[in-house]
Structure formats: C-alpha cells, structure tokens
Image 1: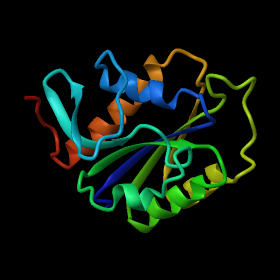
Image 2: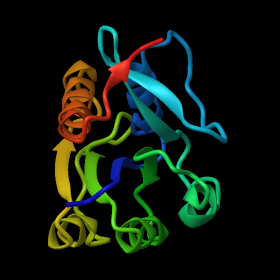
Image 3: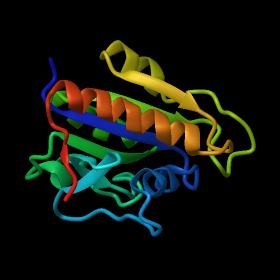
Image 4: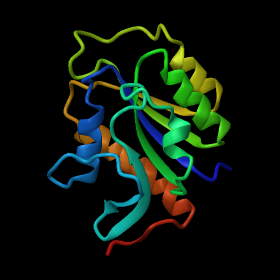
Length: 166
C-alpha cells in the first residue's frame, strides 16, 4: 500500500490546471506553490495536509525531485504540462513510490478539440498502477473538482489523515 498520494492535473498550457486547484481550495483567489504544506478543507470542518505545485514543473523548467525533496506531506497536488518533459515528473513520482491519480484535461480549456496521446502517458500511467481520469477542460469544472475532492478524501480517511480544520 502506497504511503503517499500524488494527484496530478495534466494538460496543455492554459488547459485549466490552475483553475482546478483554485476551485479545489475555494479561497476566492489564486493558490500558488509555497515552500511548505497547507491544509485543504475537503468537507466542512474536515481538512488534510497537502503540498501544492500549482504551476507545472515543466513550464517552470524545474525538476520535480528538486521541488519535492524536502516535502513530508503525505499528499502532493501537482500541475503537469502535456509535453515530453512530463516523463521526468512521472519518473520521480514512480521512483518515490507514490500512489498516482492523474486527471487529464483533454481537451483543455483552450484546446480546439481532444488530442491523441502521442507521448504515451496514458498507457504508461496505467501500466504503473496509476489511476487516470480523462476529463473535458472546457466543461464546467465543478464535477471534476468534486471528483478530486472525493478521491483525496477517501484516500486520506482510510489512512486516518483527516483532521478538524482550525
């Protein structure tokens, strides 16, 4: 059983990755990557500790291992850009033994249409026991955000990581 959860939102640039995190945190403003973990309210009064990488490592030319090397949060939320370099992030996450759940925004918000998986990411994730959900980034984001919230809640509740929000 994996001890840490990696939740990725994958898509092209401007596909809706950051909007997904903004809606998940529901703070009324943009959420950004910080150097430390934060609490995420999953249900009224019920929180879990997470570490968020809002802008993708690929867009920032960063290596996921450099960003996550000193993070102890059991749950990592991460934007992932659909480019060849995303394999570096996937490699790191798999090597570290995370349980992976990826929501792929295809088509993304700014995409003309859905696109084929020319990078082989879907098959690679599934072959490595990740869960993969392909969602329309142009549709209302409430259902995909609710799906992420429920997935995280179930994983965290099973491991007794849910705490009262302060």
